[in-house]
Amino acid sequence: LTFKELWQALKRSALDSAVLLVMFIGASLIGLIVTRLHVADGVVNFMSGYIHSPALLLLVINIFLLIAGCLIDSTCSIIIFTPILMPLIKAFGINEIHFGVMMVLNLMIGLLTPPMGAILFVTCKVTELSLKELLKEVWPFILWLLVALGVVTYVPQTVTWLPSLFIK
Image (tube, helix red, strand yellow):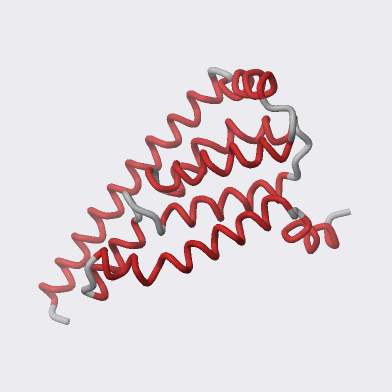
């Protein structure tokens, strides 16, 4: 590694970091606006009028987060959607740890799924595989992750059992 190559790598890293920082700032601003405008209260009132079952609410949230995970960066999604969804989760009496694990799992699946699929494109670049070749290999894992998501969603003890031993 020469000094020139090191300098180029540092410049690329700084540019990539700057792009991420701008994304996080934007997401934080959206989160702040959402909080200040009390969007969460409106979402709770709206959803409570149509959805009366926690199981149905979890299904709707899963679908929403899977789509969001396919289109928006995970960190930005967490910053934007947590202040909106948390009051709704609390209103339906759903455990916050359960919801957090469910949210992260949804967004993780989104990272593996086109059209954005950030992890797919990085892996394609590193392995020099085409997206089509990689997707053939990844789909079985995505299906198993969806099964795991179903278990985590509808059997909350899978994620709340261990923390409940420490939190009394």
